[in-house]
Length: 402
Image 1 (cartoon, rainbow, N blue to C red):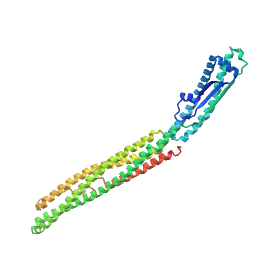
Image 2 (tube, rainbow, N blue to C red; image 1 turned 180 degrees about the vertical axis):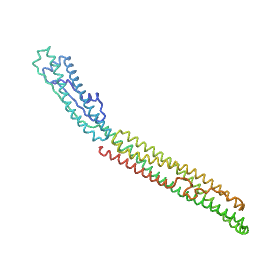
Image 3 (cartoon, helix red, strand yellow; image 1 turned 30 degrees about the vertical axis):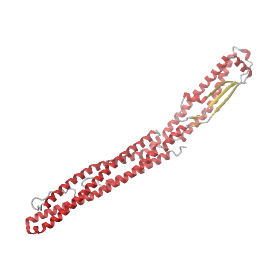
Image 4 (tube, helix red, strand yellow; image 1 turned 90 degrees about the vertical axis):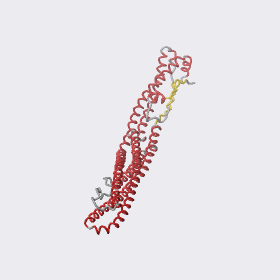
């Protein structure tokens, strides 16, 4: 009956010396060495020290073999890590796994020979003091079972999770938000056009009333009789016009309030969109995959820049609403002047002073136009398109990942 001198898993010894990051699928490599010569077995059975010396020699030889193979594994795995950082694709790692697989097969054979040599040396040294056993021939049985080597499931799993998890989900969320914001900014543009139309008509009506008042004031000096006949009719028409202007002023102020509400909603939404775009950028950079980062960085930079442009337009709108409120206050003052004159039928004296600057503008006197928000809506529409491109580019990159 054979005596087992050594039965160890070479893979476990290797992994104690080096823990791979990519080539992690390394099956067990069990090596079993036995003494097969009957006479030597009887000698070993009677001498426990000899048996222990053989066991120690076998384990020492296997440790040396494991160290050599651990160095091989480290070399292949380190190269695989560099490539993984650049491409992130499991398929690109297979060549390194195959390279180590070949080296491991050769190394396992060498490990067997090293153990065999170690046992033979122990027996040879033993014969120096036990020459009676020289006629016994040492026969060593060996069984080596080596499993396949591959790229670790952990590597593939991590990549798969990234490709189908956080990034695409966050991008989809941002695309939906961008589309909603684009519609919201178009609403702002429409509201601004409407408010601008009311404002322009209102100021035009006030200016018309002022001019007619000034004309009647001059008439009262040069032709009092004609003036007297016209004054009642003029006063009635003018007061009705003032009432209409007051209604238009309320409408303008109401539209300003609506624009301000839309502006705040857009500001909050755009800021959140920018933060999430930054998260997408950080997550992709966090993969450490240079090729992937390079592939998507231009589109991501454009997305973030476009969002910042839209945020700038909304911030400008805050100042525009403030100017609109001031314009409304000025108009209210003008109407008070006119109403006071008409109510009191005061058609003599100095002309009414009304600031007519910007009456021809299509907005309430500011530099921001509805078209600026139409452009902002288009910009955010482009953001949605850009994010779709990022999502497609991200997923397409990992199509080889199985």
